[in-house]
Image 1 (cartoon, rainbow, N blue to C red):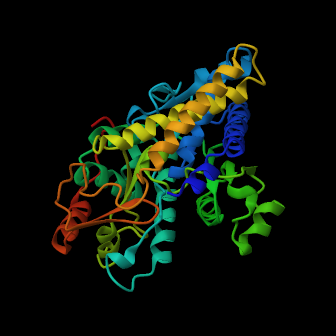
Image 2 (tube, rainbow, N blue to C red):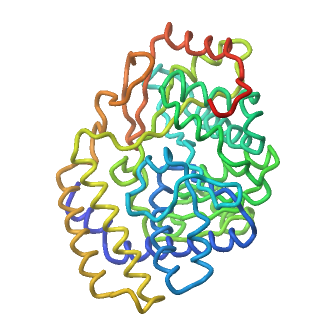
Length: 402
């Protein structure tokens, strides 16, 4: 990355704007809690750091504000989802409860390049299919855990976690996630063009869910797609609170600035279309934590998390006498300079993962990565069909605690 670009992206004004948005989201969550909302959906990689920042803000505010003390006590997240990349010091407890405000991080990531898997495939078709599929998977969480595996969409996602990725604990925690109060689910997302969050919202509306939303809008709305800008800014989505920022500098920059690795399985999505009896549309994607190697990526992530924490705490000084603004400004400057030094090494360019570093039930026949750092893992036709046929033959288990 050129020095000028890095300095511009991580300028003091951009950091202040981003930190301010984290405070806005914290306030939105406080309001959601008052409405007895029990689920907060994080459907995009770019929104993951926003919830870290909101958690840092809540931690600051709870010391002097009762409503934020109550909010802090209620926040919960499944431990496996916290492992996606939440910094260790983010103050969110594990183990969701039916009375908590439970964070649900779910891989709606749809930055798909199907053409690299097979020439001529329509990316837009698979992008929309992915978002619609995961909307239906989340919709199944309105059911009692004992009935979720009877839903074909949830069952396929569960099959992907257990039979393909061998992530039984994440599958179990997802299966046992507290029943969603569909009337008041809250969603936190980012908006660049606006296509993703509007598509997701419209898909939820089709299945009877109209989540309230905190939407972080990049470049203060300047990048919104022309055909969507008027609808978004004029209130067509009345459930959306728009928080405009100067720059979402984490968007599509990969795991080092987002905390999660987005993974897509193109061959499963493609071959599922030809198998009779498969639920349609099929989405086949997942999130992983940052891999241990190369270690520099974790170092970048740790530095970015420290920078974000300092930016939020500096902002918090306006609300709390217990925060030393001068100290936080000094810490923010130090961590920002350190992050810029890392970025000048070019760590966010090119192949982020290389060889897929996580265990799978089948060896990939091909892996590649998009410009937005979404890893695509392809299986051979034989292995893809085996995975899909195994899904068709599997039966729902009546025991949600397997």
